[in-house]
Image 1 (cartoon, rainbow, N blue to C red):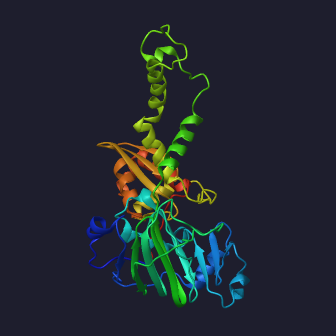
Image 2 (image 1 turned 120 degrees about the vertical axis):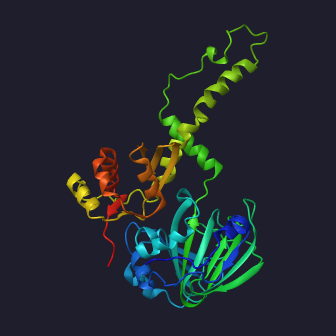
Image 3 (image 1 turned 60 degrees about the vertical axis):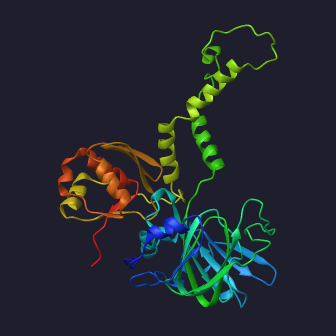
Length: 390
């Protein structure tokens, strides 16, 4: 399914609303079609390896159950409002993955996944706020969305082990969304969605925003893994000859300069950080899922695909990004792996990052570097040659 917007100005979002203010977008699609049926979503929630939650809503209580669920579970929900949430549905359903394409004005490394919710009349997850940008697409039925004030770490929450429910929620604006409508909600803006009628489905396209503490912690863990115990402070690091201090109790400025230099040398290596971050941010969200091909790609098969103009398609569960190093050189990051791409492969790497479907020039089979890169990406399950559907 090809999903695209009709006459829609993204510059307006980026200038006036992105990480600033909510925005309601009435059905901008050329032809909206709900890409997933409720029964299909329930089926995913029953599968191992799929992250799913069922939220049962009482008068004063919220109960959360975690999947996978037995098929019989959804027939025992009763009349209490309930919501089914399934994460990363775009990894499993191509039609849901297609919803991301119009939002590619946001870089790949910021993309998280597409969560899909199904709710009965009155169902929802309660007033809350998120730490990331989200586009909420109404797929089926209707939902009343309310937005409130900006929140932060001091905002009071209700006690709950699984849900971050706001203790106080004051509605500033509200709308009822119908199929194809979209609501953009910036980070930390309070919001609440309630199903109006049964068979309410919403697609949440979320974008990651790493915290400073997360970056520092994981970057430091990466550095520590390669450090040796004998890499220790020496007085020469101060840049001066060792001298006798007047007071042995003083930590001198000279010593502090040397100690700080030890830290700075490792922590502030921008090239090393860029390589680490590319691998870190492209690591699959669910690394335990094995997408590798059953058989190793053979050169004659690759040549056949190229000669037959078979499109190369990205695995929807894979993450692709690159860092430019020079005019004809990039570091390509795919599913936590780093590939150094030079003159023969850099342009191909950029094309694969830019589009989920790429036609490769058959003449590329004469490049050993191109063939080697394709073979590696195929073998790790990040791409596949798939003919266009008739």
